[in-house]
Length: 225
Ligand SMILES: O=C(CO)[C@H](O)[C@H](O)COP(=O)(O)O
Image 1 (cartoon, protein in one colour):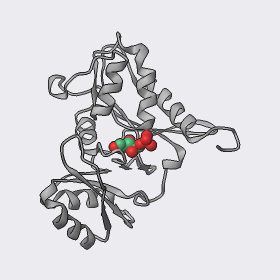
Image 2: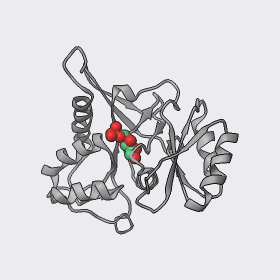
Image 3: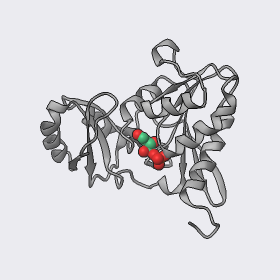
């Protein structure tokens, strides 16, 4: 709880509700994953009859959308989304992100790539000067786990298998600690080159277009230059 009586959840809700202004009639809305997005899903409920549908980046978000009777579409049937709303674990002022704390990074990357506008929603604690304090999630094919771990050490990281976790795609997550990511686009590409990597949680090649950051003073909008 901060001095204004707002806890982190209240700030997440503020950012999520501010994102509703990016939703318009007849839109196909991409919906990310996580506790901030859950507030967005709640705010999207009253729009259920006005939008064309929603594409979910995880089974968990699809379930919540269906519970609110928001029509859930398959990305392949949509021709892409008009807007994609998702949270982040870390964000820079240049709108590069680390995502995947919830393990949904691959589908999040796919929906973000297939969306015309990506609006990221977060509380202000997620804004950082340099990405990497939050361990970088990497989704890997199970048989490549050990090989990729060794390669991630060569890239300067300290990999740790996320125990007892399987992604919606049936794969594993390695969380990479101790990275100071000064060139996010270069590291994103370098990790993607490793055989057996499905995706990594750096969103630098496709950063957010808009970042809505909630703090005690309200919601600040950062647009990508
Ligand atoms: O990338 C994500 C899930 O894979 C989430 O957007 C990220 O972990 C932020 O979560 P939260 O809104 O719960 O803080």
